[in-house]
Length: 96
Image (cartoon, rainbow, N blue to C red; front, side, top):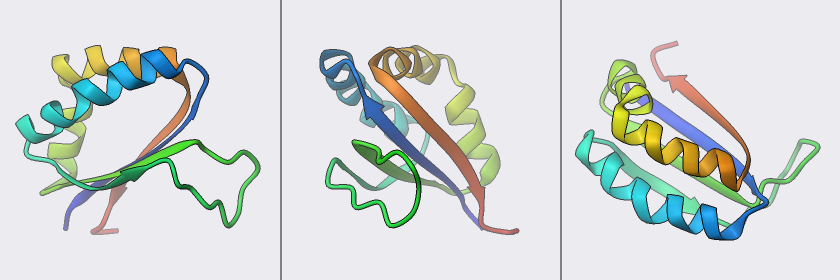
């Protein structure tokens, strides 16, 4: 019964996105998250706009995932990501 963060980004500012990537892994670790996969080799099977980058992060609980997303340290990193392109981030509750 974990909380899974799934994010995709269409990168428009590569420098800002690289800055975000340098910051985010340590923040995920600090909040007990586990990086399941990340990369730019995306093969969109359905959908309108293919993302350029995707990530899947697992947390022990949905609450832990939400605390990470709302934390002060991730809020700062999130702003970097938001400047770098258009993103979609979802929280999957595996209990549902």
